[in-house]
Amino acid sequence: MKNQIIKTLVFQYILGGIYILGAGLWDISVMLSALVGCAAVLLSNTYFSVRMLKVREDDDAARFLGYAYRSEIGKWVMMAVVLMLAFTTDYSWDPVFLFAGFGLIVLSGWFAPILIKGY
Image (cartoon, rainbow, N blue to C red; front, side):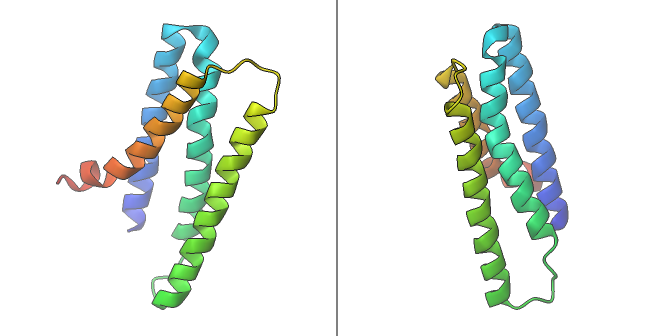
């Protein structure tokens, strides 16, 4: 399980980097929007993954689920805080690139197990 978590994070960071560089090549002014969109998800996924990597394998199911739920709530709060901080600044964000990066990383988390396992 720990190996899959690490592979998923690496896949997401590589995909996010490619998207940010591609957005910068498209138009340098939207690169920061792409970065913030990807970072909102990548930072929160990293937080969640690091917390889940600390779980011991001999924990019972109730303790594991409680830990997973608390970590997931922390992940969503962190994501909301990053987006809230971004939208409360005076910078003129490009919402298309910001939410495209956000959606890309979220969807990559759904499809990463398929790519890692090969089915």
